[in-house]
Amino acid sequence: MNKRILITGAAGFTGTHACSYFYENGYQVIGTSRNELASQKWEMAGCDLLDKSQILHVIKKYKPDYCLHLAGNNSVVHSWTNPMSAIESNVMGTLHLLEAIRQIKEECRTVIAGSALSGGNHPYAVSKLFQENLALEWSRLFQLPIIVAKPSNLIGPGQSAGIVSILARQIAELEKINVSKPITISHLENVREFLDVRDAVSAYDILLNKGSVNTTYEMGSSRLISLSDITNTYQTLTSIKLTFANSSSLPDCPPPLMNSKKLKDLNWQPKIPLKSSITDILTYFRNQV
Image 1 (cartoon, rainbow, N blue to C red):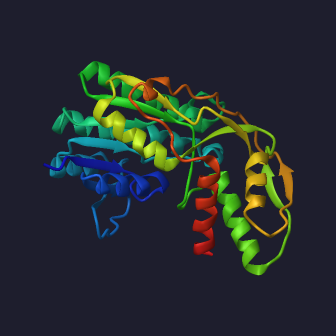
Image 2: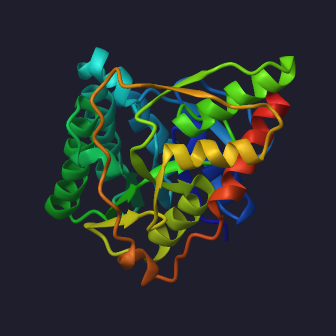
């Protein structure tokens, strides 16, 4: 019997990888996005999580065994310009989802994708902190099987708004016209923890099946890398001479190193090396360009 999984934010960067992974691993996948998009492999349902009647309808219709909640506002930059949108999307959207599950399918095991940035000093961090605390409290108050996952910066092939993908797109565009010119990047020397999105999705699978409810699991590569190291790796992959202009328009709050021990105790290990991730990202954008 195929287990049925509902994946919110299915049209997004992580969501696209998650739908493909769970489909290929025998799950019956239902993806949601604000616009009902066609899929040749899994079912897609249009659903705006800010409209509680829409997500209630989806849960009633499909009665999923699992839910992976990836939808929401994931931009630190946009949260500065529209902080209310970040709060509404990440907090109220999550509340509407959990309430629909509580009312219709209490036994649905649910993973809420939090963020390593939830301890930062920006509106996005506030929204994710509220989201994570809300999920844990709803699990405790209503005895719901809810788990919180806190991934570090996710990278990999696909339409990501992350800095590693932004760099790859610009490099691919410069390669196409065979021109070298400076690329502007903020906080070039600050370090980050980067994890391939495909490793993160495999961790979500483990948590859905083996994770302890009302528990937070951190996930990361356990290695801090500077953006300068990322640009140096890109230079080894292209014949274009890369130059970078350092810009610091917004305050930077590097997140702490994630402690992945609890996940590793469930036999999870990141498998994709950083250079392989970067190579796949650049290949993806070369094909796009």
